[in-house]
Length: 137
Image (cartoon, rainbow, N blue to C red; front, top):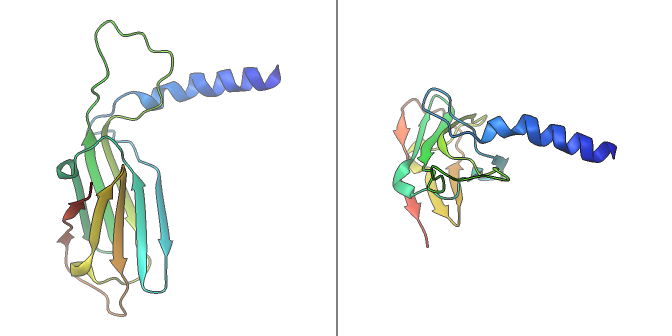
């Protein structure tokens, strides 16, 4: 019984996180960041978006990923029983703790996941770069 009550509270207080966001209040997609011997890898779960609607930039050791996922399911007379899928504007800024080759950052969007590969280097970059996203089907 206690578990049922706790779950009801969790569902009630989590409901507002699923309201579509706007540019002044973006949400943050779930993200994994890990390091291999040669690179830093960022993997983000953002299904339901076109690769042209994803923006990736790297400046001053900060990788910024932003975009917009349109909500195509809402209709005027819709009654929802469960709302967990996030829509609207998102943005995530991630500090990259090691020097990387800024002009060789690669981004791939496939099966709802954005993967960004940042090759490591020993030199500190000083420029700002936009990253082109390759869409794979």
